[in-house]
Image (cartoon, rainbow, N blue to C red):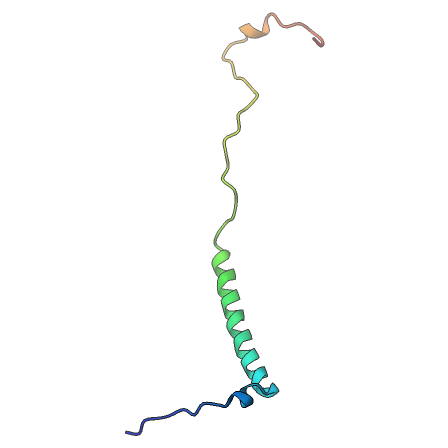
Length: 75
């Protein structure tokens, strides 16, 4: 069995434009995958504030006795 040894590229070669484009496209693909993953996870999560019970200004009464002494018009 022969151990495989990858040769490292020199710094000058890595700084050349065509090498930068290759690195840029790889990082762009990774970012797109992460973005799609985040979007798909957020798709199933609702970011809504918790609904609070509001106090009602309406008072419900069982009988009409309170309405007998009411006056017509404005007060």
